[in-house]
Length: 273
Ligand code: DGL
Image (cartoon, rainbow, N blue to C red):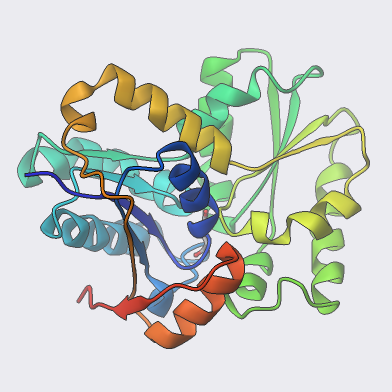
């Protein structure tokens, strides 16, 4: 039986990845799930993020998704490995769960000339050291400088991404990161919520430094993956439909998601507990 590609995030952030996935795979069906009722994940324990993410994956599998993308760096950092190694064999070895950190770490090799890469992420992603581990594995000699931007997710989740008040918090985290190393020439926005602040971040970062969003990187990597795994590719249903689900209030989700996506959507409330 065929089914949609599941796209999971703690809240709205994964929409920034979903829109690039929709552009790259226009015929594919998608099922987006935001765990808005329990966002943010970035300040939660390893165990809580793992438990919540596993519940989301189980729910998406129960809806028939043959493939789930954890479009959330915090979930990718704290839950992906356990789910792939411990849970997938038990749940359904024929399905796949993929994250966003590995493809981003792969892509950064071609982007940085100095080899000094700045990472802005949630406290959880930064504390996990996942980018440092993946980037040094793939690009020996690169140096990763990571700083947390703990206020950026609440600003986005509460709908203040375009507010004047957000400017101060954007500049504060960018300045803190850049003060760590003058050779940073590439900054990864290692949280799927952050592209929603892109204009403000770009304005706060000197023009010679690249600011990298993950959406197109993850979409390109998925297309490449599907070419190499025809069994997963053929299990994806293709009707160009997307269903949007949230664990919180559906009308509120639909309103903000519509603003982020630039077109109106309908949403449903589901429960993971
Ligand atoms: N958007 C998620 C990420 O990419 C995390 C946001 C949160 O803290 O819930 O890390």
